[in-house]
Image (cartoon, rainbow, N blue to C red; front, side):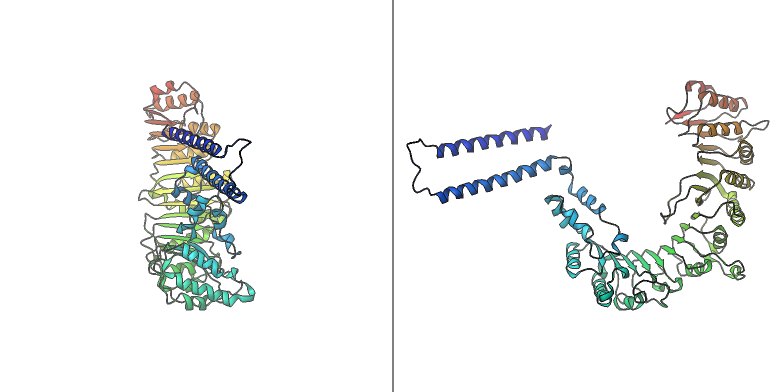
Length: 538
């Protein structure tokens, strides 16, 4: 209301000002036909007046437009929000690795309007990402406009031109040494088999080995398998190392890191186990794509166990179960550690089935809840897509989650029945899939898991009725200590649910709580009340 009144007052005052100016100007220049203009008032002076008036009109028009723009919703955005929008529009590194002359979108950002341009120019965070090598003018522009902000630097060997590779690499190294105290994120991308893949060792020795990277938190090092050594690196504050190269050449000077990400396209399991001995302080470990073990490798059981007592999470992607099992056998991890693992191998493969059953089954004794869903848990690697996930949550806070690329319902149903044969005190079953196993398998599984107190389920209506039928199996009551049924997101018949609740109540197994989604059950819901402790509708 205040803004509206201010605009009305401004508009009124400007209108009065323009009217007064026009009236006064008309009076000054008004004369009769018989009168002549002042002879001293030359044509040149008239033209000057016209130009001055035109310039004034242009300035006023610009100010009015600027005021109009500031009154629009986008014009009222706070400076901090605009800077964040500009920051989010900066391009990712990967497309830039092969186009070193590209200005990282800054010029496009500056051309939106004068306000956005001024904010972009004076916001150091928007100039803190530099791809080397780059033209000298570009480098100085980014260096100076970033002021004292922490820098993200990428040096790409693929961006080196063939005709002047050595000079560009030398210039990139000199820039790296100059910026070293300010760098917080560094990627050294030396494509294996690419141009100059043997230059990374002398480059690091010359330009990085003796320089302290005081603020560096993240190092991404992609190195060819052809180099034989790697100079020590002085990075006392480094927290995360992503490494793609010969594991035996990870510098000992980096063993204080707490997060390690390994791309292991050329490494076998025990190469990784041996390399992990260098990182006793690691808390988060990510491993992708281990080369399968040789079937006749008789030495695999002779490797000693590596203890990672600080580990909080282990993320493993695209590894065969027959490799995952021995890796876990040779790593001593805290019981509270989270293990997230993905595999694309067919579940029905015999070797996979046996390894999986052993790994999952051995964890059922400490299992508190079991979740089965089509949602993949967050991990270090986002490229892989999985369609089925089993997660075992233990009583001590740890979890073991395995995701599969493709599944067959009958195969998974049989695997679930096998899993239910292991002793457990499972309390919570969380099923988030559109299908359920057959009625006979459901009865067998739920009968084995007699300690269940809570079931959470989101599935199709017909599948849900099969679950109710399995729990109604007699003469022995299935899930005798079940207290809570959470079926939010699932549609069901109110008549069918009433029959189920009546069955539990008649057999002295009344549910303490039923949780449903509003509008997902046919009325009347009041019929549930005599057979239920509490109904929660969300």
